[in-house]
Image 1 (cartoon, rainbow, N blue to C red):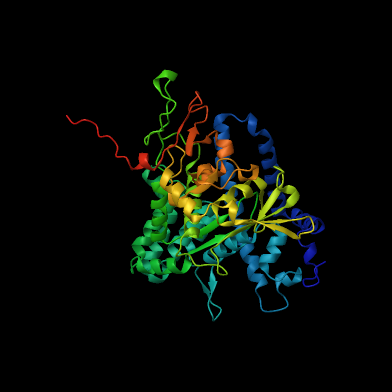
Image 2: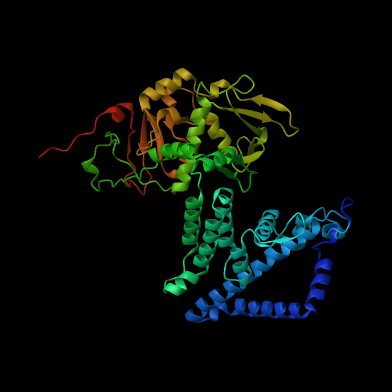
Amino acid sequence: MDRRFPGASNVGGPAYRGGMEQRYATSDEGRDVLASVDALRALIQQTGALADADLVAAVGTVEALGRMVDAARVRLAGEVDVRSARDSEDRLSAKFGCRNGVELLERTTRVSAKTINARIRLDKRTRPRMSLTGDELPARFPHVGQALRDGTLGVDATHEITGSLARVEDRADPQQWDAAEATTVAYATGALEEQAGMIPPTFAEVEMHARTWAAYLDQDGPEPDAERATRNRGLTLGTPRDGLVPLRGSLLPEVAAGLQRLLDAHLNPAVRFTPTLDPEDRDETEAWSQDEAVHDPRTNTQKRHDVLAVIIQAAAKATETPTLGGAAPTLVVTVAEDDLHDPTAAARIDDTRVPVSTAHRIACTGAVQKIIHDRTGRIIRLGTPERVFNAHQRRAITARDGGCVIPGCTIPAAWCEIHHVDEHANGGPTHTDNGVLVCWWHHHNLDRSGWDIRMRAGIPVIKAPPWIDRRGTYRPAPNALIRRRPRARPPSG
């Protein structure tokens, strides 16, 4: 039992819910609700047997019921919050051992605080208000509130309409603002379309309608929006989950546009390479041409992630980047000695678990220090500088390769990592004859992509995956000379 909030541990528990549900079930309203619940259970079990027309009809019926349920959720959450905000010992939340209405609702409903706060906020916007003298005032959004309670307006549309119009409320003409709300609600509920014999709008159309009204009502133009945007800009790295770190945030338009240009520059659709069927038609020593782009299996969202990865690496290596503790921003990878050669083991980057293979691979970049410890946690070895190609070697390899050596890849040399062709862990030297430029994605997926790189007399040669070139021919990789060579122009006339 929580000593700070007596009785809180029982709120929402089986005994509590059972008692409250039994009490409500004995009322007339409760019996009607439970009858609807039983009907829904039967519908769920029989869905597969419904005819097509009945299935579509059921979707509309259940959605209408859901709108009423959502309206009740909003209204009940708002009432709990109001009764829990009273400045007295008679607060509702205190009776159930909770700090406030949100905690009481969290424990009772077992939904997130984010959802509960959204319901409370919506109720505040759509319920009558009280003046300082105790007189009742109209709701901020009376038309929205009425449509919500009638079950003709869903929660998604309600949030969108109130959110869009609330942003311009203090700068709009009151009469126009009221007309905007009434018109938008009529449009969203299909009342206008029914009168005109038109098809009811989708949510996307309602969203556009509400935002168009907001832009029209904003008498001060876009400048206040820009000021709010500046205040609300931000970027947040979340807690690692399932091997990924969620990224949330809002970018200013000029920042988003700049990032989009960088992404666009490296997301051009590639042309699939079609190899010749006759082995005699091509010499094995012929290099990949500049125009031989190959099909990329990544989705656009994955490509954007990978381009962002190399942008971050380029920024970390830039001389203008501020230092941390007198050194360039450096990833610290820790791994137990017994796990160094265990492919199933894990290393850690900060507090996030990653495969040991990832730790070996990223150590090529030069912005990583590997720390090896024993099972007691004692540090027994630090990563050595010989593991990383130095600045002179990088310049030489860059002058030779000119960019990622995988045919069709557009990542420039400044954004690439240097890959040990013969793995350093297997005795491969940190030498220009054993290093090639590859982008972040191709480096991290080289073992799984089907591409293979070898060195012949200090020159990297590339073999494409079998689904691209079934012959398995190694050809000299694209290099700086090929990249600088002007493309042949088609004959005129």
